[in-house]
Length: 278
Image (cartoon, rainbow, N blue to C red):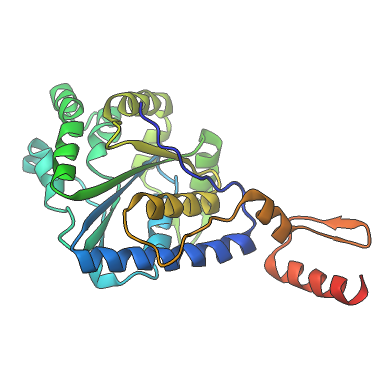
């Protein structure tokens, strides 16, 4: 598997997350303006297990972008015709000039979920695996900018998030009978996932695997990778927040006593107290 190198945010405090997210969203808007002005086409794929944070990450990407120049694609169960014409189903959703399209799950359903659950035939699976990279790279030769994220969570985190969904009166609808079925096929899904990484990652079209047990860190990491990958010209160089700066902004020592994991208000209050009394 070809791996993409990228800066990874690790366990950022919420106050730091909010500040860095705002900086990245400004840069994403600059990127989108370039896409619109130059008539570029950008497709960003988000794959991962249920509850990995795909939808919430896309939401943070899109919340301050110009809505008329982006789409979020989350297709339902395919018809028989769509299942036989798998690539065509997704080509119809590809971005038009000047547009960014986010795929909340994508054509890679055929690489993981469909074979895990028996929703496609073996021949359909093997045909997809043999042809998908060439298909992607053909579109990239014609100007498509494609980024493929896989948000990776462990089993314990998925169980916790499913339990939270089931017991939340505003999110219970996110948990389905299918989620329960696929939980019991964790190892089968893992096998298909690893096969996908081996067979469908290339130098031009790599998988970018982002740890998403911490959703906040995963969102920032995906945003930063995107602004570094898309060849627009930033108004000024973007310098990501480094781990030593994160520590500085979330910890303070006051009269010899260290205070750690502070939120923004706590940090500001203690900073003012330190300035006044030393």
